Structures are given as structure tokens and as C-alpha cells.
Length: 210
Image 1 (cartoon, rainbow, N blue to C red):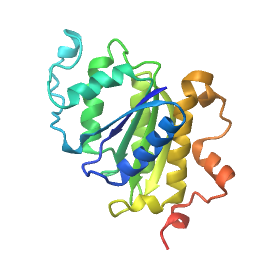
Image 2 (image 1 turned 180 degrees about the vertical axis):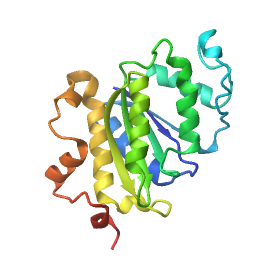
Image 3 (image 1 turned 90 degrees about the vertical axis):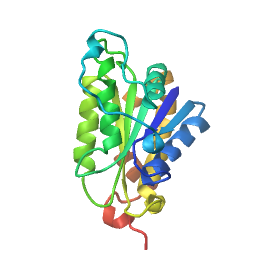
């Protein structure tokens, strides 16, 4: 299983990246191949609505996102991480989503697996996941699940034990998905799996550092 993790946080080594790293580590530990891109230090341009997508193959804009778009076509699964900004994805994540419009007319991402990593201090996870899930649907990407981390200060999400374990299990799921379709055999969503397997409450109040 080949998985690309794309961190769309404007901060390097922030909470989103902590969880992505945890997932990718467990993809690799279970035999998968990984690539990781952080958009925080990349020169990326927003979609200019030129509609060249209908005339030429790929996006006509050439910048640091070009290589990420190319890599997305070559993997089996996409792991997109974003912090919550005003109840939605970050600016970097929105640029990524918009720029992949060049793939939609021929559904070049169809059949790949898609998963989300979402971090916030208190709220906005569900609305952000709704946007990512809708994006997966429009691109005919198969949605797997989402990890929702709670943290405010940089790196603080490592104290969110529930989120860290969920990121671990998500990585394991992604590593196995292509070979035995275990992603489709699951009887419970990821958060219930963590509750049952590790006996941890999913309430954000119970996950705060003491």
C-alpha cells in the first residue's frame, strides 16, 4: 500500500503533522510505502479558474504543489491533514483541494482511499471533515475514516492519547486496505474501535493534559 501524507498546516511540526507522522509511521511499520509533504514552507498558488483543465492534462500552474499533484496520482491512498480555521480547512488545504480540480474531469483519483487528520483546540472538526468527505466523494475517492485531535499549543496533541491511538490505528488500516479490503470489513468506525480496544473515553474533556 502506497500512502501519501499531506500536512496542510501553516505551522511546521505542529499538531497536524504530529498525527500525520504517527499514522505514516504505522503504515511503514506494517509494510506500506509512504511519502510525506508539508505545505507550510512551499510556494503554492491558488487556483485561478482558468479552466485549462478541460484543454490540457494537469494543472497549468507550476510551483511547489506540482510535484505533490503528480505524487497523488501514483499512490493508493491519500492522508490529508489540516487544522480547523474558522470551522473549515486551512488555506493550504483549500488550495490543494481546488488545484486537484484538474483531475476531476477524468476522475484520475477515483478508487484511491482517502483519510483525514483534523486538529483544533475545541470545535470545527465535524464541519471540516464534512468538507473533506465531500471532496472525496466528488473525486470518487473511497473515504476511510478521520482522526480528530484536540490541542491548542504547538505539539500539545501528543497529550491527546485518544487521537494518538486513532492515528496509529488509521495507519494500520491504510497499510492493510489494498490487500485484504479490511477497510470495508470493519464493523465500527475508528472512534468506536479506540473506545473498545483501548477502553478510552472519546470525550475531548477527558483527553486534556492534567
